[in-house]
Image 1 (tube, rainbow, N blue to C red):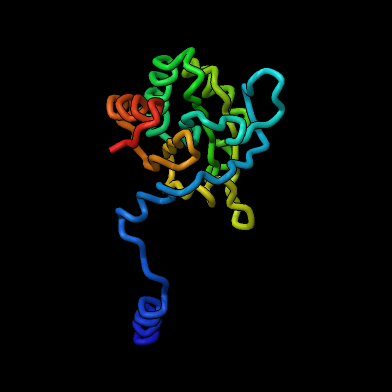
Image 2 (tube, rainbow, N blue to C red):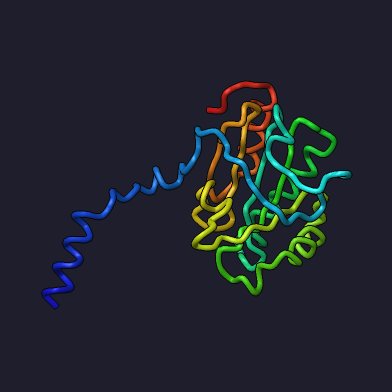
Length: 186
C-alpha cells in the first residue's frame, strides 16, 4: 500500500501539468486549422475524389465530428447540423462537413454508416470517416475533440473560431452572420 501511495505522489509531482476544463474545452481554438487528411469520403462534390480544407479557402467551414453510435450526436447535434445546412442551402460562402471519428466502437462506427447517417438526416453534404489509432491519431490528434459530438468552426482566414461539444443553433446563426461578413465573433 505504501508503494502505491508513493507511486501516486511521484506521478503527481513529475506528471505534466493537467489542463483546466476551460483550457481543454478551447483546444485549438484561435489556431490555424490543420489539414484533415481523411481518405474515406461519402458524397463528395462532383468530380472530386478527395477533399481538404484548402478546397474551401476563403469560406466559413463548419465541421461536426460524430460517431454513429453516439446518442448525443444522433439525438442532439446531427439535427442541429441538418437545420443549419437547410438554412444556408444555396450559400456557397459556408461549407458543412460531417466527420465520423471512430476512436472506439470500431465494429459499429464503420465507413458504411456514413451513408446511413446521411440518409437518416437527409444531409447532402460530404461525410468523412477517420479512425483514431495509437500510432495514427488522425484528425482526432490534430483537432483534439474531447469526444463526440464535437463542432469545429473555421473562419474565412482558416482560423479555428469555435471548438466545442455543443452548438447552440441560434448563437451559431448570429456567429455565422458575423463570420460571413468578415467580422470578429464575440
